[in-house]
Length: 116
Length: 113
Image (cartoon, rainbow over all chains, first blue to last red; front, top):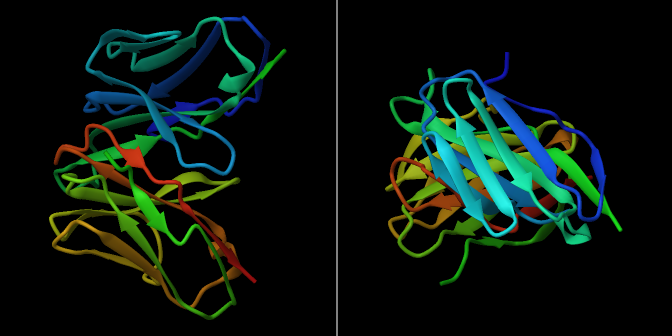
């Protein structure tokens, strides 16, 4: 079982739709949770960063973390064609083989296409 | 503030050659990590350096190596290149020792022919 599971999609939605992207994880030691957006042939860009459980909002983006269910979500409101990209979840914490240090673990990424 | 800078952006090498990629982290960041990204495998962790010490290493063969200098700049080296090493190599820097979040460069696209 992978430490972080993320549906690779692709997910296709019409412009203006609310998009929900999700990841599940197995390691309860994860404390820091991130969402990245990656456009084709570019490096990932940090979108949202959350510590522990709760919600965080930034413009059209809302990140949710439910540590009891080991489940994180990213919601995009009023989606735009410019949101078409791959979205990667990531989390940081001590893993079995991380030598006592936090290690960033990434999901596989979900490809999102927003069509006009 | 300048972001993470990776050089070169593109590289074409022949099987059997070696290659060195460079990464300059965001000023003040002491943690630098390297990742390999391919369409089939996604983001694969290579190694992480903090204050010139390798703290974590992924499951890659010994042909992949790295180092970090006292100014936090990092290099990774791949020797005896194979066709399967063709990928986007990404460097990321973190502002804290706890690796709470990472900021990526644009990557070096390596093609092995």
